[in-house]
Image 1 (spheres, helix red, strand yellow):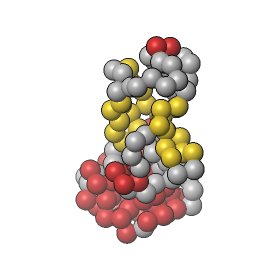
Image 2 (cartoon, helix red, strand yellow; image 1 turned 90 degrees about the vertical axis):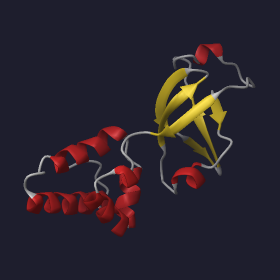
Image 3 (tube, helix red, strand yellow; image 1 turned 135 degrees about the vertical axis):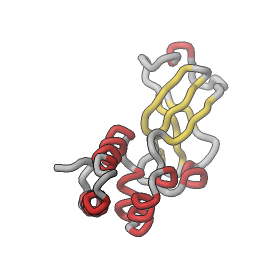
Length: 137
């Protein structure tokens, strides 16, 4: 079952290849990527999804959604600046599931007492994201 969105996520959250979201459908929590069908976006709910058995095609539902995981604008200034300066790396980061985003941030934050290493790790993250890596090899 697909629940069409009444808005364009690019207008709300910026242009991305993928939108990983979390929220509720009629009070039942969900998380996962939005599905693109041409120019329209929707939430896909499988038959075993919580609360999906109570839904039928054509039902009117109450939906709340928001982007999942750390967002670029909410991170430390040095990380945000590095990603903003490299649009391909930023787009790749924004397209990652929260698991991968948090792993990158934990790795970088492990150097709080060594700013020189922190800067190197941020540069490496940007380089690897641009090369298509979800995580460090």
